[in-house]
Image (tube, rainbow, N blue to C red):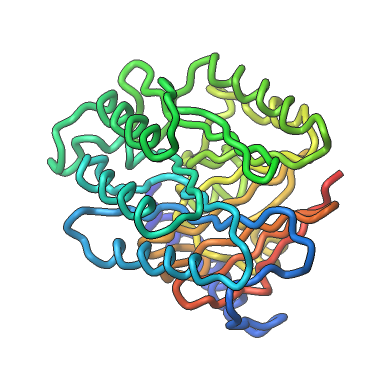
Length: 331
């Protein structure tokens, strides 16, 4: 089922997502970038689905404006996560453009995550004739050069302010999939090991993957069969072994939604299932569905002693959507 069909088959939920997020429940404010409270231990900007194209000027301008926005922040920003679909068609000029932008326009460290458009859409619409394997290798090469790493695989971990971020990616097994992810047992073992290490001192750990897990964040309504299939990769039991695990995804192109939408329709930007927190990001570069539709939206993730706050906002206008904020206890 396409996203368009999903919208029209659930038009009431789609319309209510927009109305309730816009209505002045707790208000929509327009401050400078700041943290919600003092004594913030970690402050991370989250965006996804920039869908850059070398010859498409607006998405490039959106990202450039957001990076300048982050540079001028009143609060200290410790890192930026771009959670996949960085490019639209996996072409190397667009990929090179992205890494040049984050390298030259900001000194804030960026964690780049590969999505299906960065690998699975290689050769799509005749933009490039490379294979998925070549697209994967291109992404790893550019990421390594930017981050000063020498990874041979499309997954890794990094620490910011002592908090671990684990990046999960498509490995292109048996030719890979167009819109999906393929993973080796070694990557799942890596995830398990890194979670054990990252959570051993009671700190939260953040797993960054372009795809949501099947059945989370309203996936079955917004875009059925777009998540990581449980019968193929049973990741949830691995996550649930540990406390304070946060799964950060994009992919579904679903906009910022008020908390009330979760109660009414089961559609959420942030939710907890069996102790694991699932955060799904709106698409940054193109129009969203089932929530605020416009581009430039993402979220700010703040870690404090004892809690994590997820605060959606527009990275271009600085609109903060207070009726879509979520707070989670660190146990």
